[in-house]
View 1 (cartoon, one colour):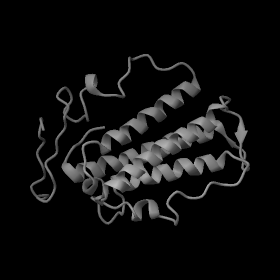
View 2 (cartoon, rainbow, N blue to C red):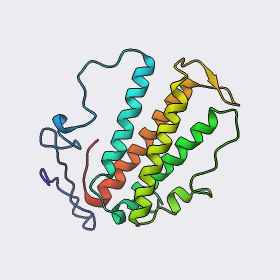
View 3 (cartoon, one colour):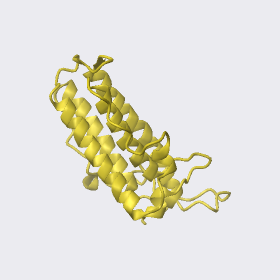
View 4 (cartoon, helix red, strand yellow):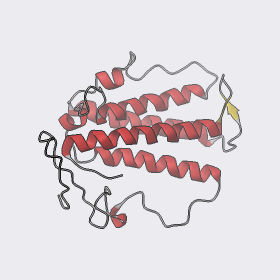
Length: 196
C-alpha cells in the first residue's frame, strides 16, 4: 500500500485512499504494469478502435474486482445504492445476453438470473456466486463477440429492430464505461484503492 493519500477527517469510517501506482499516484497501476497499456499508435479503422475501447473497459472492470474476497465484492459500499462490484459483474453478464437477443431474429434467450434486478439483489457474499458471475460474464462476452464477428460492416442492421452494428458497439462501450465509473466509487469505498 504505497502512496497513501489523506482521508477526510470527517470520514473516519472510510478506508484510507491508496494506489499501487508510484509514477502517477492517482492511477490504478504504473503504466509498465497496466494490462491496458499499449504503444501510442492507435488501431487502424473504426471497428478496430471500437473493439479496442471495449476491451479496455472490460479489462478495467476486472481490475476493479481483483484482490477482493466474496464479502468485499458483494458489499453495497455506496448506500443507498444496491450496487456492488459483484452485482456489476452479474449485471454486465445479463446485458451481454440482452445484446445477443437484440441481434437475432430467433427466440430470445432467457434472462440469466430470472427476475428483474436479481443481478444486483442476489449478488451475495458466497464464493460460488462470485465464481459463477465471472464465468457467466466471460461466456456471455464470448457469445456476443462471436455473434458480431460475422458482421464487420458497422452499417449493417441486425435483428427484429434493425439495430446498426455501429450503434450496438457504441452502446456496449457506453455501458461498460458507465459501470466502470460506478466501480471506481464502489472499490474506493471497499478498501480505499483509487485510480482509473
